[in-house]
Length: 342
Ligand SMILES: [Cu+2]
Image (cartoon, rainbow, N blue to C red; front, side, top):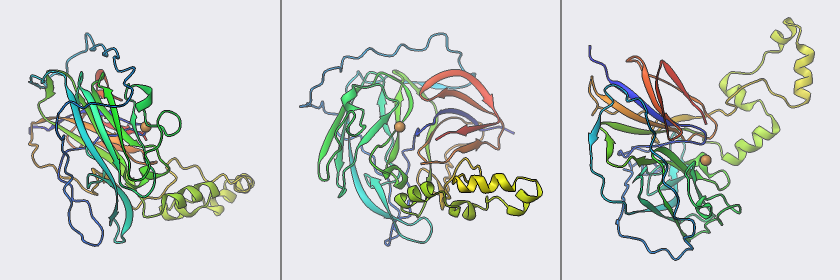
């Protein structure tokens, strides 16, 4: 039987990526599926009023002698000459319904996660972020090499974007691979403000590819999640069924330790502390991509937009070949499963 072969280019650590597909995000009371419209807008050159010092950055050297994955087809593709690629991101309050209860979330251009933005190495990215929230926001371009002023860490490199204001992030694209962007304001990432960046190599495209942003959703207000974590409450553990048993602690002679730990607010060891109502792929609980057929080799771009979840990635069809990590090509390695960190 022919196999569908997967190649993975993934990014972890507040890292992520997503896909340019219609999404059926469960939206609030209207229950209307909202297609994530992503428009690479006009590709008109953008005149930035900002001080563009530091824009002449060295291009990253292409990886030399990188082994080629057998069958990892790239199609012949002639990239247009380097130019400015403009995106407009409208950050907006929205209501989602993942669990039967309408809850506040943040959408970008009408979707959650934010749209995947595509560039080619050598392009200049001009991303206009329009803040239509009633609070400030900011976007950080995770792991992207850029002039410091566009890094998007509030009060450190970039001032927050006030409600109703627009901010231009402009930087030369000097990398390739799958990258990630997310808010750096408060706890806005937990309610949806994250998305993927794809930087294509010049004159090269994977024959088939798919980008997915993994994430976690809780109906709880993120501030309440934060408060619960600081209080070391057992609530999440109770919900997940991972509380430590007093009887077992006594039986194994560790009762004293357990009490001492509780006195110190040290909960039972648990890597992912938070209980989530849903885990999402590109903003949905389930994601079916029937365009891929048996025998296809697909470059999967996987990113983790979750606030605190590690995802194990497995494939029923056999081994997966990892070809890149955190936007860097790696010597291809076959794996049975893969953990995508947060
Ligand atoms: Cu980050």
